[in-house]
Image: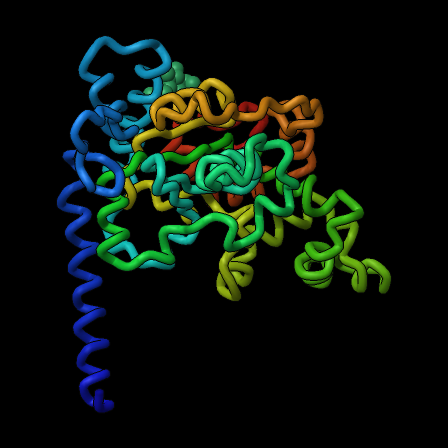
Length: 340
Ligand SMILES: *[C@@H]1O[C@H](CO)[C@@H](O)[C@H](O)[C@H]1NC(C)=O
């Protein structure tokens, strides 16, 4: 091909991509109920796709669990209509957090600090063709290796649209400030997380500590929650680069007003909601979602303690930053906050 032709081909592909992604929007109100992979049901095969199972069950009588999942879905849709102004077109970059399971017809948007290690382990079992059997036997660091699981951004536009329409899309959310405190504790109060201390800690101390010790400036390993909050609400922070995924808002990681999620799981009901997703996927016989025995989980009381030292001024600013996550996922304002 000549240079000119290559250029034209490239342009045509770009325009085509936009068109395909837009097509997805016109279809989200009516979920399609076909087989994953779109190959149809062969003779004698009656296995339903997870989406089909979900919406068929919605029409029959619903269990309490299903009713609550439906309630969340509807609330999210309402909140999106009320609180977002413009709809924009999805780009492949928006899809980096969506993990694909072509075998079961699942799309999972992973959110750090919301059981994402265990969900990645489960998906490695489900997509691994027998390589893994027991989720907890997979080391945590291996679950996070890029390339062990495929993300939707790696597919072509046509393949993306097909999956967005046909697969069961789900994510797990958590009370925004509990998630934030959990991220702070994990990344800044553990001595082994030197990468985070170097990358973020040193910068936070340089900017937000009036008279830092040379050692603190060098190591970045004793960032206080207060300093972390100042860093988050400082307009310079997001101007320079996007938030790290551990404290980025779920709204910005998973685009729940652009992608129509079928199941909104909650960390607060993690085991029950995970069971529901695996049952819809027809995978409850293949794998069990690991139950956590951890007693050091961040909870509401712990979050209250961390916020005790934060002034109402910064509490308000931080709330505004995470406001969409509170509104879209039906989390009420924590009682410990001290602003009107
Ligand atoms: C939203 O939250 C309120 C209060 O926690 C709860 O009573 C209600 O059932 C929730 N709504 C949905 C749709 O989950």
